[in-house]
Image (cartoon, rainbow, N blue to C red; front, side, top):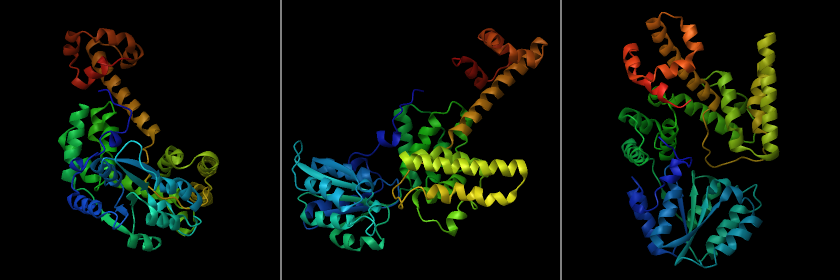
Length: 397
């Protein structure tokens, strides 16, 4: 199957109210807000990550035939930036559409205490805007949002139930010509815990793998949730405390695997000088890991954990917010796939060796030549090759 490199969660993002599933009450409230505008000029869409807050905003734009100006609040942290970019946009008409909408995504990223009045500037713009402002937040009930809750209409988006997610996954499979068993799809839907985006990401990841066994093995999601939570705590928090020192203690995963997860995902959160400092901290953690292995100096474990958690967290100056899609370590996957290919190669050579009275070692050594011999369907039938072994032989080298 030819898989598009673009994320499926973006490719199949809902674009209209009709395409949004399981949010009927929220849609009714949004339509009521649009009818009453400008009684309230701002709409806050809040709920867990992956429930469709940004998709809802784009559906509103389609409903209104409006141009949408999307801004990430995490990138507009202080009064000056917000005033310079959002201020003019809130008063200038669209050149291309009948209406206009200003979308400030991840408003959680604006801190009322550290951002030199950033949140205050947002409230000021809401008062003066000529167009609807839509803000998205994971947690609107933080104390800093007291005034915002009074000025804006709040609409909560609920986590989708697994049946709704299952239906979406089946539609994506049909459009992508991706064959995945119903049991696997159901398991993905249940374990996504209402996060549609995570479910589609899992499906896309599985579709890229060239082994049927791996499609069946969808991963120990509970374990991964634990490592996800630990990484989120390290990457999003700048404050160093006792909990940060013990952050990986409760993760049900070998420390060597945790190293791989951190190594894979540091670039997802950091860049520039922060990226360099984070990798330097990871390198120091690896130095102490090596000393523990070679010299059995277990007292160094405290330093290993410090550089793996607090040191990596401390490279940033302030807490981060927003959702980040963490990746599985690709190194493990590559090793696993290599082992699977080697296992198929060995099983083919064992069957050939039994039939031809030669050694498995000799067959493995001459496998490139053997592939041409095994193109003959009669030979395959005589050796009793399985469908998966035939599929392995038919793949291009």
